[in-house]
Image (cartoon, rainbow, N blue to C red; front, top):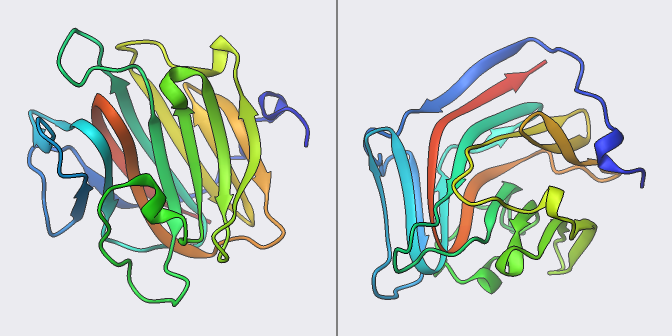
Length: 217
């Protein structure tokens, strides 16, 4: 696979806004929180920010299933300011996730391994205490195929930096962009046509703002 950084910006497509959230409140009709039951752990929305402040694993799923060509955008920051859960690690996400049975997503505990059976794409940016950035496709048989990995500083996290994250799914290719730079792109021979999007993290304190989901041509 060629280096993802050599990818060009996707050609302009007409896009229609499907969903947006400014996170003034955490709307449980729109979002489902799966969080390990550990002390000093919480997920909440306040003053335009979705806050993930946890000792363990957490996934926040958008309950609306997504299909076809998509663009998902948001801003996200990993906070490091000497608070109890502060740890520079794991700006992660799942997308196009589905149950192998084809049913709606079952609720899980928030532990990372509980998601192994879901066919989906996954990026773990700054994982393993900010030593790896990985792109995987989870298969229906439970295999987590590693598509690409970085360990250099340019692809890891900086504390308290507001990252502009963009994910594109278009015509069988999915890509993951950070601050206008393509980290990963993958033309999937067996693309996932629909599924759910989720913010993912573990032991850290993070803020997410200005989520927008678009349907592309």
